Length: 524
Image (cartoon, rainbow, N blue to C red; front, side, top):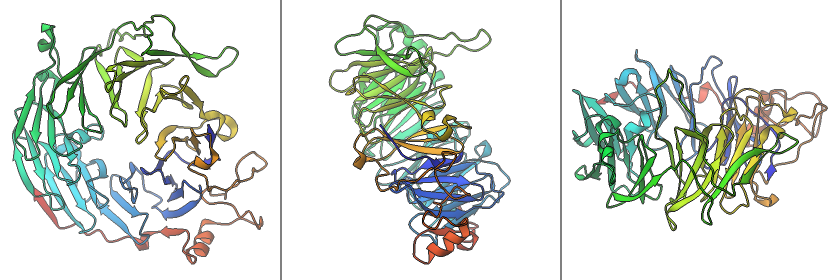
């Protein structure tokens, strides 16, 4: 395990999807740092009164969006002169801002589901589509999906008390086809990874129902629940959670029982049924790991179970509704491993091999309820887990390791004390790496032992000051003048000097384009 030097950060710090940059919002400024060198590549000025509610990269990592409820700003990493402003001129509150099909498209959802506005940054025009069914930040992504390769937009709306599915052409967003599905209360739609199929699933209150459509909107198949000898399945609640593997081979469906059903594409027939047992017993093909505190200290380690064990369960308080079923489904990059978690066993991650062995592969029992678990986006069979209350701890699992690993980032941060909210994300690199941040510092960790394979391999080694802090400027954004060592250098001074050499660039209000989104096209 190797760690980078500590870098100045804030509560809003985000690595780019390609892992090449780190973006951080400071008061009145947006800092873009290159991962390879750990040096500031660009500083963008922001209005001092901007209350940032949305901060995200485009999928290509070429654009970055910073938005409040009143204004949306989009900047380009490849063109310093590009900057777009979108002003919310309406009276409705904005509930979500996100990138659309590409770098030049921004989606803005309005409160109460009045509309979703699709802004085209290349043409400076916008299209309003009325009545999106899902519009709040936590659920809006379930209501729209872009078709891979062609970027056709599939949108779920609600009109006259009925669900409506519409497919829109890229760019113009003209309605290519729309129809009223057989659903009573659809809960989401999703394109397959090859763009051949569009899936819509029904509310759990309507039983197990999933509709598969062809790319042109014709109904191909309706799935009405798992095959089982248990007659009570038809009487129970239906689909609670949906996940499609990245390779498109399987759809995982969780309901309010201990069962997860796998459908195989393109037949969309039941392929496997996974049941979370109350007790598990180690076997040659099944490893069970328990997290424990190392004797005589506060460090954590994983011990392999040698006999049958019952994962801890949790009982719901008497004054709350009992939660049941699966609440987490996640396929790894290869599409052959499925990670699950259930409501009544919140400290346990179950890992199923749905490829070759089609069995339960590993059970990982943590000391606290699991807050988040994510597979590496590009590397197969590598899982990261975070638990509630563990602000600096990260748990990692890989089947090739002797045991899962635990990283304590608090030991790597200056002073050994974490401040404010912490965030952990995978850093997309050729070798597995992790980005960790609290409200003041961020650090990168590489799982590789080879120094030449760390993402920051071109970074210079910096000295420490008398307080043990890495030497950086007083504004904590750019390197200190290490050669001269005389006086203090301001941001403005560095920008003036380096902009002449084509180095660091700064975009301010003078670079921004006028808000020209007055001319809109409305799609009902």
